[in-house]
Amino acid sequence: MNPPAPDSVLNHRPFVLFWFARVFITIGYHMLVVAMGWQLYALTSDPFDLGLIGLIQFLPAMALFLVVGQVTDRYERRLVMVFCQVIETLAAATLLIAFLTGTITREIILGAAFILGIARAFEVTVMQILVPALVPVPLVPRAVAASATANQTAVIVGPAIGGFLYAVGPSVVYGSGLALFVIAAALVLMIRIERTVPAREPFSLKVFFAGFSYIRSHPAILGVISLDLFAVLLGGVTALLPVFARDVYDAGPWALGLLRAAPGLGALTMALALTRWPIERGVGKAMFASVAAFGLSTIVFALSNSLIVAIVALAVLGASDMVSVVIRMTVVQLGTPDELRGRVTAVNGLFIGASNHFGEFRAGAMAALIGAIPAVLIGGVGTLVITALWMRLFPTLLHVDRMTSEAK
Image 1 (cartoon, rainbow, N blue to C red):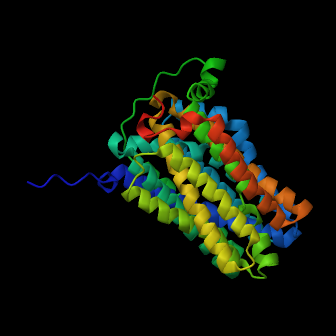
Image 2: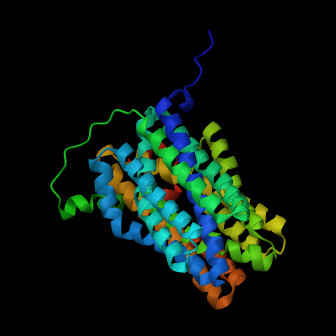
C-alpha cells in the first residue's frame, strides 16, 4: 500500500487567500517605491534623497514597534492587516492626486513615504505572525517558504511593472498601486482562522519589553536576528540602483526595473526550492554561508561594469538573502509562544526595518560623499567581516542543527 501523499499548503484555503493578498500588497508597494524613487531623483538629482526615502519609512517602525507588538498580540490580526492596506491606499491616493494636479514635490513624495512607513510598521509584523495560524505546525517551514515566494514574486513583478508603467505615466503607477491595496484588503477579510485572543494584561514595562526579554534569553534567536540586521545594513544596495541605472550603465527607468527585480528573481528561485526541499540539517552553518554569499555578491555588483553582470550578481544576492530570511523567520515563529509572537516579531521587524532603511540611508549618504561604487564595495566587505565576527560571538547559532528545536 502506497503511503499517503504529504499535505500541501495549497490545501489550506486561509493560506491561499493570504498568499494572494501578500502578492498584491507587495506588488503595489514596490510599484510605488520605484515610481517615488525615480520621480524624486528626477526632481533633485541628489542620491542623498534616495537614502532619505528609506530613512523616513523606517522612522514610524522605530517609533511604533512597541505599539505594534502590543496591538498584534491583543487584537484581531486580520483586521490589523486590513488597517495597513487602508493606510497604504491613502499614500497611493496622495501621490496620484498630487501628480494629477501638478503639485507633486519632494516634500509630498517624502510625506507619502512616511505614510507607507506607518503601514509597513504593522504589516511586516502581522504578515509573519499570521502564517503559523494558517496551516498545521508540521507545514509551517514550508508555509514560511511559500509565503516568501509570494513576497519575492511581487518583488520581481512589482518593480518591473512599476518601471515600465512609469514610462506611460506616474499616475498609472499610483492608480494601479491603489487598486491592488483595495483588492488585498478584500482577500484578507475573507480569511477565516480560529484564534483565541489572550487576556489583555495591564500595561507595564515588563509587558512592553517582553519581546526584548525573550530574545535576549535565547542566544540563537538574538544571533540570527542581529546577523541579518548588520549584514543588510552594510550590504544593502537597493537605494543606489537609480544611480547605477542612470549614471553607471547610462540607461533609463526600464533598467532600474530590471535591477530592482533581479534580487527578487534569485530570491524567488531559492524560495521555491526551499518550499520543495526545506533545510532540515545544518541550519546554523547554512545561515552563515548564505550571509557570506550575500557579501560576496555585493562586492561583485560594485566592481561590475556590465548591466548583465550586475543583474546576475543581484540575483545571487537575492538567493542567498532568501536562505537567511527563511531560516530567521521559521526559527523566530516556531521558537516563540503565540502569546508573545507579536511582541517578539515586532522587535524582529524593527531589526529588519533598521537593516533595510538605515542601510538605504547609509548607502545614499556614503554615495553622496565618496561615490556609489565605493559605497557599495565597502558595504560588501563589511558584510564579510560581520559574518566572521558573528561566528565567534554566537557559537550557539553556528551549531544549530534543526530550525524546530532551535529555541529549546
